[in-house]
Length: 388
Image 1 (cartoon, rainbow, N blue to C red):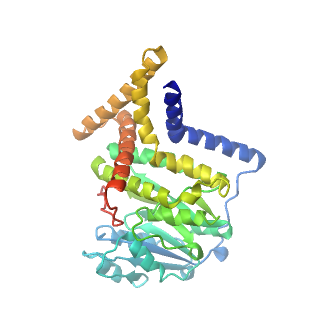
Image 2: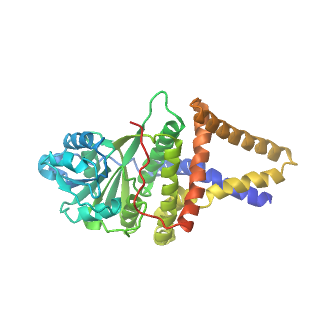
Image 3: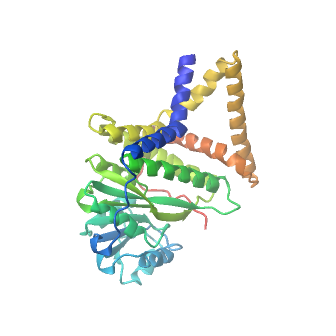
């Protein structure tokens, strides 16, 4: 029982904290033998021709701001294309886009989901690089330059930008928790990228070489993750570029964030089942290690091990250490429960956000796994409401 307890506890610790520590040490060792890689040149002469694709569904409240943001991006005009695809939109989104002749608008009445829209838009792309971003996120002015400069390296097949969540002083648990989570994720991605490759890209902002892009199945939930990892499976690296970032507001509340997380978790299981080749350490010695450590453990066994650790600990309380550790677990979960109660009453204590959000995340993984195996998973997203 003690062996199972300690093994489970180790995996939980490694998943959320240990991997970050180990990754940081590996980076330090690598830098001792080889200096930190220099940033590639952003000289306009060497920048590739690229297309920015924005898939928008009923985004009339955001779309004009998104257009202005896209038109103001720093990139040579002769090397930059804009495609907005609004399939299935029933509001004024397509009409607003039509007012801007610089943008190629693709629209049809049928809605097939984001990935179907992306597949259709890709048929119109003939540039070397394609950049994807969401309609409700806003990019920094040099985002495209900072992304595209990496393609001077022939080993780079994709570049992932950074997601940043806007948080105000009165942020609730969903905002503060999501913001803290993405800051930690960003640190891990920087180190992953420096060690070898980022493990997948987020749809808020990422890019690929057009020649390496391949359509994913129409029912794919995490299309951004799958598209980028299929490129990694071909032996190319995914670089992380924190100086290319997409800003978005947090989910409207914890319920909306939970809805989003459950869907991501269901998509995570789907991706793992479809990317089985990446478990081969002989073919992918570094990528396989990163993939399992950073993604697979979070999306599969770790939430179950959290429960197992709690109940095994309850059976081992006859020894002082186990008793103290059990009380520490109880305190952590009580703080999370208190965070839930206070959140419902709109009383916000920041010290409670982390345990509360941590529990929400792991609950979402459990529900996502159940959802994936018990239902037919649609590729059409039910959008989580965002703060205005």
